[in-house]
Length: 244
Image (cartoon, rainbow, N blue to C red; front, side, top):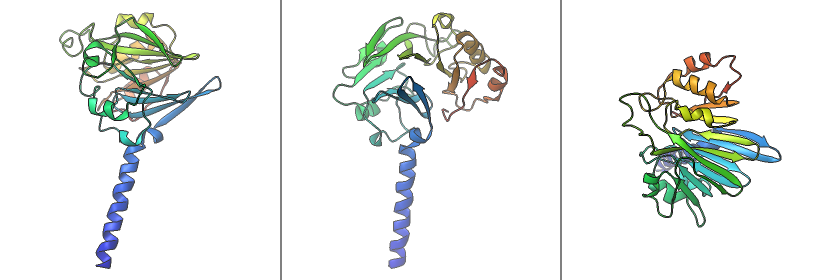
């Protein structure tokens, strides 16, 4: 009996440890920046799910399961949803992380599915907690792919955090509007054809936007080695994180 009790205790310890690793993936998979005297932490949960910590505020982008155990993560001050596809919109997770006063911004179709969410349309801007948020277009352009992300539906977002501009592109190809984004220090660009961009398109988009740091995300099984080669000596730092 004692032997079986010890085995059960070991199994329980393993389960707890595994759960903790899942819950803290974003804490371990994190980059930190200084913006003046303020700290910015970027947490990479997976696919298109991100969290930003800035000035004691937690901002989630497209939080969905199973990339983290959101029950053990901080409640959201702000949630931004790019579009209504289920790998970007998870209403159960939103219900888990929201609190009184959480601001939820989304494209129109996603906002219609989230209680008290505010719809943002391309070109619309807001300021919340001193953070500027600009909704920008996100859509497919290649013939035959328009059905995945039609023009006029989804959003990308640009956040103005002090002196830093962060671009979360959403599901998009290398659209002409990228030429008018203005200065961007950090960019998240999706790489998974046929739904978003090919490696070649991402390289071209990066050279158009000229971020200081590029994070490929939403990349699935895409081989990113060619992207590193294409942007070598471009002045753009490509950082690969666990964002399959």
